[in-house]
Image 1 (cartoon, helix red, strand yellow):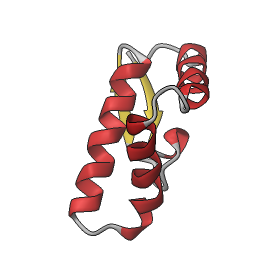
Image 2 (tube, one colour):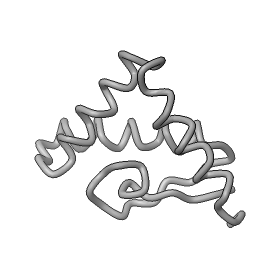
Image 3 (cartoon, helix red, strand yellow):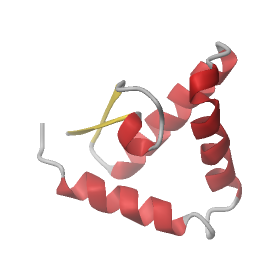
Length: 78
């Protein structure tokens, strides 16, 4: 199990996401950003917009995805 924060994934806060894979923490970040958007949290809106763009254009966002996977892989197990 590894941990990445919202900030490490491009967001504005230090909420921790835990997962067995980079995809686990990316999906947790997506949910966190959706919840923040619903709550009217303007600080998270730029990160939410960026995440929506990545889901809509996955080939274009492959660099971010690969960088995130590398960063996750480099983390120590918790």
